[in-house]
Image 1: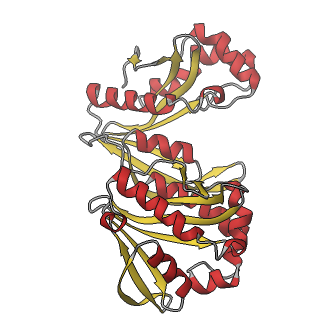
Image 2: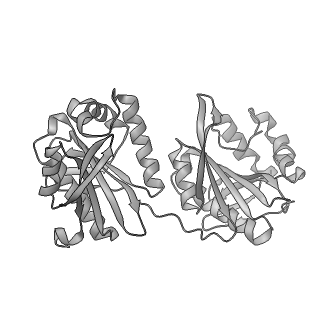
Image 3: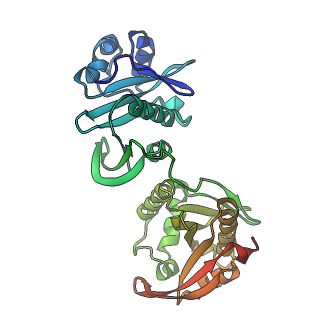
Length: 360
């Protein structure tokens, strides 16, 4: 059983059991309708006193876990964090948390998870902590990564929410794991003389859909036939998950002068051991012929080589796609060969770019 008087101090928070003197704060939260407190929290303020006296501690009494308040000194309760599904025989437990909406984005969840996990491994014999997050909950995926958890798999339709089933990501942390967050490229903005490159977002979906549905795009890339807004929205969401896992990053490219979307460029298959990656792009039909793709690729390459120490970027283009080959060559890539039947039966010309090619 976990200690009844748990008190964990982190840089900005205290994690401790809920107490009767939290009643006013909890009543205020319940009245507001904000939902981040542990399961079983009363729906009406009248039930708060009884919940604080007994209900919130029932999990601890069964030995299966504990509910703790996240307390900031000047504010009071700003969140809750729990251990549950504890199996003392197997040496495992699961962590879950919620943060008051007004205090999200300040790193409280990551700080609390790291503090609680440190305490678990220091004071108990538990050997593994699980954490689950909906696949579309990017904020929670980021918390897990920053707290040092390892992405172990996806349970399809594993969580049921009010709007239906969601895929569920399973994270795990073992005693002795390094706790160092996995490497990932940062969300950032880059600029060239004519372009602004920034993270893809929901606002890009209509332009992405139009670009992906274009006949020339379909002929020269691997986008599915019938590409539509659903496909574009899925790509935007997937791109951020790809970044969080350290597998790549995607940029929306817009003209500095007009702010109009002109392309998307993505890095994929990041190899952090060898510091190599592959670049791909789609240029909007209304923006072709302006040299935007090459300018964007060179901007990203200089950032990747100069700030992150990468050693090679690969670019592949269909043998029939002479326009994309010209982009590669104007950007400084060297033609290295042809990969036969590499994309849906098409031969692809392989190009490579190294820092020396750009004088770096």
